Image 1 (tube, rainbow, N blue to C red):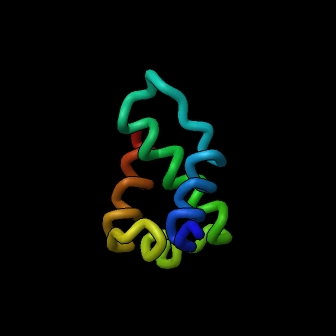
Image 2 (image 1 turned 45 degrees about the vertical axis):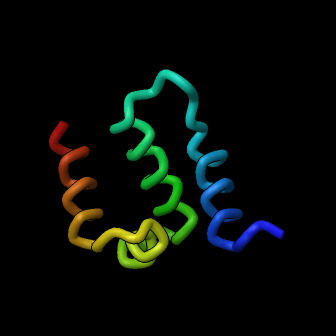
Image 3 (image 1 turned 90 degrees about the vertical axis):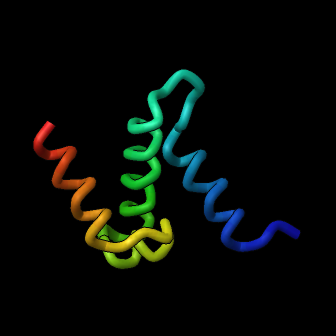
Amino acid sequence: MIPRHLKFATSILATAAITLGCALAEIERRVIEATLERQGGSVPRAARVLEISPSTLYRKIEGWAKS
């Protein structure tokens, strides 16, 4: 039986439509966006799932808005 957290990670990867040849930053962004969507837009919940701090997640989102 696959552990729950691995099932979720597999689902996120499929949802993010990650393909070979993508830059790591693009893969990271797709995974974060897919996680945010699955968590109803909640940054604190998405951060918990991704095992990063909410402040790190907010900083990444702000960086995308600037580019």
